[in-house]
Length: 86
Image (cartoon, rainbow, N blue to C red; front, side, top):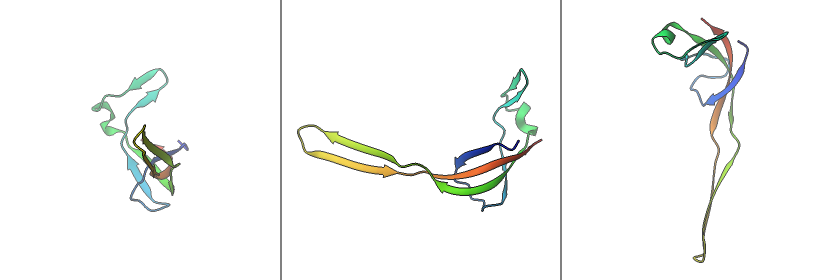
């Protein structure tokens, strides 16, 4: 708890709470990834802010034809803090 992670953009506003699905549960040496066992686990998180990711440059080039194309992409992200795992 208290970990800050970055996810794809969530619809919640800043300061709002969101419930995330549990994917993997680690308790000491015991690791649980079975969907039936994790159905009762609830992960609560608080949205700290929304941001844009680093720009990824996509460049295409074909030799001897004069073809060049440059394009960019920035992902929409949300920063959340895990508040409780029950």
